[in-house]
Image (cartoon, rainbow, N blue to C red; front, side, top):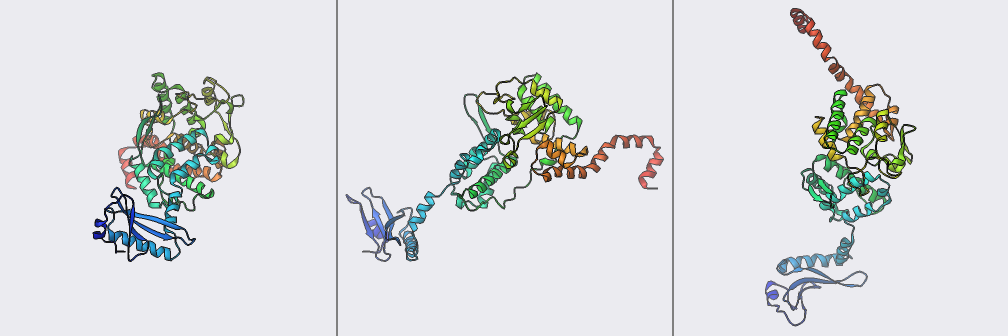
Length: 426
C-alpha cells in the first residue's frame, strides 16, 4: 500500500468498478475511485460496539491529500479515545432545527390556548421573520450572537416582503426595531416552552438585551388628541377611506382600554349589553391563560352604542366584521397607521398606546392601582402600579403645562418694571 499523495491520486485511473487505494500510514484512510472518475477521500473504522463504518471526508479537488490526511488522523485519534465520528454527524443530522421547534410549538396546546388574534400575529412573526432567518439552524447550536444577527436583519428590513396571500389577501411584512423586538421576544417564549417540553436545554435569548420600545410613556395627552382621533375616524369613515367596523373597533379600544386582540376577536357570545359589559372567557384574553378566569369589561354608554349598531351574525361570529369572510378576525394595524398619521397623533403610538392612555389618565385622575388593575384586566397589581408612579412623576410637568395660559395672563397684567424686578429677583 502506498502513501496517498497527489501523484498517487492523479495516477488512480477509473475502472469498470469502484475501488479503493488504501493509505500506508493511517489505518482506515483511503481514496475511493468511482467508474465516473470521481475520487473521494474516505475513512473506515470500527465503533466501540464493533460496528464497521465508512465516513466520507470529501472529494478530491475540494480537499488536497494532505488536508484529507490531517482529517483522517483526527478521526483516527477520536476512535482511539472511544468516540464514534460518524455517530456524532448522524446525531447532528437528526437533531431538531429551529424550524422543527417552531413547527412543534405551533402544533402545541400552549399555542392553541392563545386567542385567535394572538395566534395570527405570532404565526406571522414565526413564518415571515424567524423561520427564514433561523429555521435551518440546529436548535442546540444557536447562540446569542445568532439571535443578535437575526434581530439586526429584521430591524434593517431584510425580511420585509409584500406578497399575495390569496385572491384578495396581501401580506405586507415590514422591518423596524419594534418588529425585531417583538419577533425575538416571541422566539424567547418559544425556546422557554421548548425547554419545558424537553426539546432544548438552553435559551440563547435569555440574557439578550433588546432595549425598550419606549411606547408606554407615549399617550394621548388630553381632550385635544382624543378630539382629533374621533374627528379623523368620522371623516375617513364618511369618505369611505376606512371601513365602518374597523373605525368602530378603534373607537371601542380608545373608550375601554381593551387590548387590540380582545376587540378584534370579540364574539357576540361575549357581549352582554343588558348589563353593559363584555365577559371574555379565559381563552379570549391575555391573562386568562394564567388565571383561568373570565375578564369582565365594563362598557361606557358610548361603547355600548357602538357595539349595538354592529350587525349580529351568530353567537360565535365576530362583532367587528373582517374585510374577508375567511374566518379570521378583523385586521386593524394598517387602518390605525393611516388614522394616526392623518390625526397627527404621536408617530410611535400604537393601538396598545390607547390602552396606556386610558390607564394613564385614570392614574392622573386619582384612580388607585387596584381600580386600574380591574379596568384593564391586569393579572398583577404591580403592572397597574406603574401607571400610578408614572402619573406621580408627571404631575409637576403637567401642572406647569396646565398653568401656561394663566402665567401668560399674569405676565401681561404686570407693569414692565415690576416684571423685570420679578425676573431679577429684586
